[in-house]
Image (cartoon, rainbow, N blue to C red; front, side, top):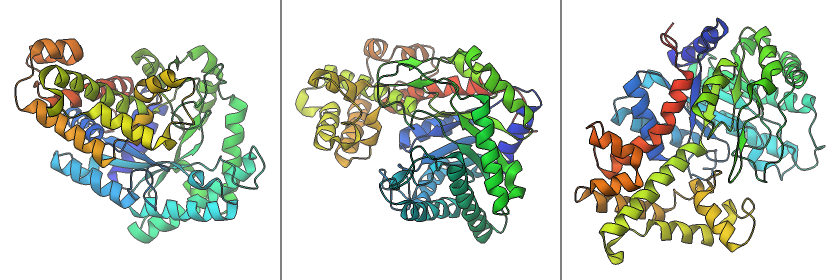
Length: 435
């Protein structure tokens, strides 16, 4: 088994021994977020788990325009340029299944899903989240556990065959199950959030175990390291449902009966540092973070854009915020079904919502050009300390102590790393990952 996969299985082994350790997964394709994550992991000498999602990266390009091979190439080249050891970089695929093709009949959607799995595994992704929970055209709603598990097992068989074909060995690790609400934050205003019951979690596991056995996949069960459940954490556009340990106590106790399994918690973005640490202690040992990182990126860029407006005439400025708003209005498909209310409410949501639909627009060339111009404009002269204090106060404190350079690029990276520090602190236990 490759060393990078060993990090994940060892993490689980250590956690099951009572180490209270975990690992976080960076779910983003933005180069600045990825640079921040790689540099942070390099500084702290930890492995780094980076995941691409099925709508973000697929065999046709996804919304980023990247195939899994493209994504791996981009991340690997960035890691190499930053001196990060390839053996410590782990790539994962999130919500891999028929998600992108739900409007097609299941036979067609699952055919695409098989090709999706092949493309991820062939590109060297080692952590595979099998998620066939979504109903396709003509399916019963909701799907039964048996149907979900049978489809997941079908994809696992494809994954195993592809891995052996390309790498001679089968060394993948798997996560099964899905969270409620849907990936990426709730679409509607949150009223109540039900924690997964222990019985529901056991039913999911047993359905998958049976389906895997039917396809002769019993041997991979120890490599199913994670079950996605709902621990009672979520966010919508303006609020966060905070983790309440007492509500998931029975669920947490249930997983203690499985020697090679921990929970994977999605939508942990915006949880407090204390809540993140408690989640790991309660066996939600794989923490996914995505929108919170691009939200922090957006915060840093908006702050710098405001500083730019203070320093430069309008004609010389990057116009980043205008470019972003124009792109979102011209192509509203990524936000219009999510944001509701009058024009003012939707305008605020486009820029500031926790669900951060902004992240779908960063690959736009005009926006990327404006971002690069912003950084160039502010790199030409030293940034006034009072303006850094006003708009990036946490970074200002580090600049004053000499721990951070007052350049736009470094201010951006450090602001994103403020989120990573919380996850690192929640997951890290001295000596773990390297047993």
